[in-house]
Amino acid sequence: MSSHSYMNADKYPLPAVPFRAAGIGLRTKHYEDILVQKPDIGWIEVHPENYFGGGMHRHYLGKAREHYPLSLHAVGLSLGSDQPVDENHIKKFKELIDIFEPFQVSDHASWSASGNAHLNDLLPLPYTEETLCRLCENIDRVQTCFGRNILVENPSTYLSFTIDEMPEYEFMNELAERAGCDILLDVNNIYVQSVNHGFDPYDYINNINVFPIKEIHLAGHTERVFEDGSILVDTHNRPVRDEVWELYRHTINRLGAIPTLIEWDGDIPALVELVHQSDKAQAIIDAHIIQDQAVHAAE
Image (cartoon, rainbow, N blue to C red; front, side, top):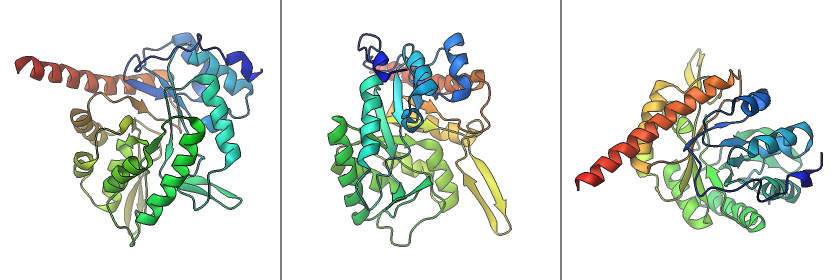
């Protein structure tokens, strides 16, 4: 099917904000179900790299896009690489933006490409001035091509660098200010790292700048136990843990009703389970809104 069959601005009206703040990641297993069930979710998000080739995947994305606002969350720009972002990748991404009119586009503060090698991981970066400059250069290239701001996500990491010059929240604050980009705040990643690296996740949330944050991610993680200890791994293959829900509640109370996505990429359950997780996020957002309205009414 030709991609030009989707290019209809009237078909994909863009709301000022999502219909509801909470959404879900759309995966292949749920293509048919989401069209039949049309669940009460605010929006959907997909990895654009899965739709570069057109065909069946792009067909179903077009059908789902008729009912829900869309966010494109990339995993392949490799913004942190010590080389320019691949022009062909940017071009294919831009084609999807033009076709499907997402309300947000994003990638990660990480790297996955070096020379001709492309790795299937989002690899960590040292939090240094040199890294900031490199990221800002690549983000500028992408934003110039797209003609819009992108969101950059804080990564999940399993090691830290002795040459780090600042904590991650300061690095993300600086990145948003210098690059003029926005932030996708992954609350599960913050919790995973807080356990793996031994810091207070609430301190992270309390110190991240509010204004650039335009999206939040939630997901499940797994504990991996070894002879000399254990780590948490951002596996996206189970429900959000209670500790992450509590951290998310604190995040919403500080940041407000930020669009929030439930990610689930492995051991994918029935669509109803993702919607249930989305409803839990929406309930926390709604409770914050009610509380905020009551405070303002009492003033």
